[in-house]
Amino acid sequence: MTALRATLRRAAARLADAGIESADRDAALLLAHVLGCELGEVRRREVLGHELSDEDMARFEALVDERARRVPLQHLTGRAPFRSLELRVGPGVFVPRPETEMLVDAALEAAPHGGRIVDLCTGSGAIALAIKAERPDLEVYAVELSEEAAAWAALNCKQIGLTVNLSVEDARQALPELEGSFDVVVSNPPYVPTGMVPIDPEVAEHDPEIALYGGSEDGLRFPLEIAERAAHLLKPGGLLVMEHADAQGESLPEALLDRRGFEWARDEADLAGKPRMTLARREGGSRFEVPTSPAERPVRRRATVRLLVLDHAGDVLLYEDSDQGLTPPATWWSTPGGGIDPGESERDAAVRELFEETGLQVEADAFVGPIARRRVVHGYSDSVVRQDDVFYAVRTTRFEPDPGALTPEEQVTMQRWRWWSVRDLETTSERVWPRELAALVSARATPDATAGSATSVDELQPDDTVALDDVEESTVPLALGHR
Image 1 (cartoon, rainbow, N blue to C red):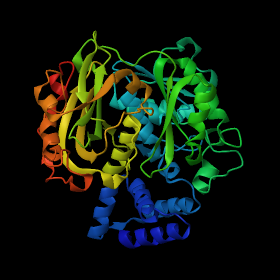
Image 2: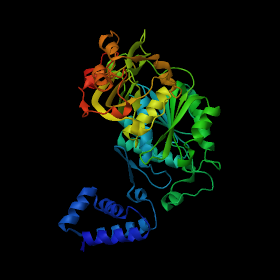
Image 3: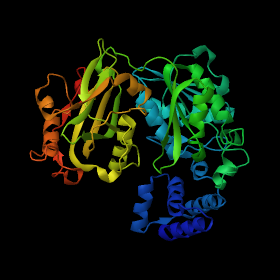
Image 4: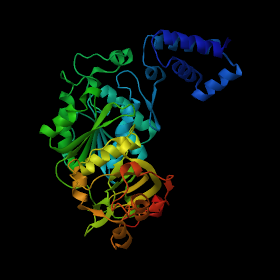
């Protein structure tokens, strides 16, 4: 018998000497695999001074030897976590990474209730299975060229007990019978530039080359060929969600817009702030559809920044937004603003949203706030949005907005703009959100009676942040389950 704690320490030291950054955790996970228990149980036994049998010790040391030779941990345990799932993996299939989980979020947000999604280059089936697990209403397809990788995907479908339509074929010619029928195409294609060998031995020596290399010096040959196929598979207005290398955050969206049948494309960073995912919308169509029941609307959650843009007369800039899924479209007036991106501060989001929606550029320290916070649920014809709003104020001379950076969707929904006085807000019969807007504006934008203008930006100071009531602001009734 051997002391468990001392064994773990020796194993962790050996793995660290082999260049493994997560040496302590890897050693504990290998021991959990040997003992057939969870990581927490290993830690408990370590604290209580448990011992290892000679048989378990021999199995553990053999695994540590393999890991020190940089065999992937997931190959040794046969398992890889991905979102809420635990997948079976091994030689011949790409090991899913945590950063790929953001593709699932984007696909789920874009998919309508009962929609159809395909995962091109599915590998272990990680993306397709995560989507199906979290949205059982969706019809999910998965395509993989490698028969070896597809066997792992089929095994995962069986063991997890989810129905995904898996086919073994080239993603660049896949599913010809289903062209024009998908709401979302998601893909983590091979994108490593040829000749650029990954630094980590676990990747370079153990992930299959077919899942790594993008077929050209810039790594974009295969991603663009797969994107071209996606354009044929998507419905008009459907969305492509594609992972890429750090260096491809500008080149991939530009290439898509140049020649691949997409009307807009934008890139998003991962939690580490690195370019990671391109979103592109297929030409034509509209994403606005009225569902048969409010309960079928997909739910999105996000944090947003809202902007009180005040001129020196104390008036506030508002846009008339609309729900184009209704006939006639429902409309309302609201402040500029939008979602806070992952890793983005509230003030940085305020700077970006102000420029995108008005064309006005200011520094982050020009914003006063936060002046208010609230939780709000929006019910629209096509979705339900539950969001945490934070409000900031900024003073400027009156100007004419130039919303040149609006997304194509915003260009459809945002009808017009105007400057509103406090009296306008208090007496209008039109719908204005938030309902407390007049009070928020008047508290910080009352004109100076002697000077004939509002206080200067230096004098525009916030009170303590106001906690507004949790509210619903909806163009259509909401199902109780969304509240």
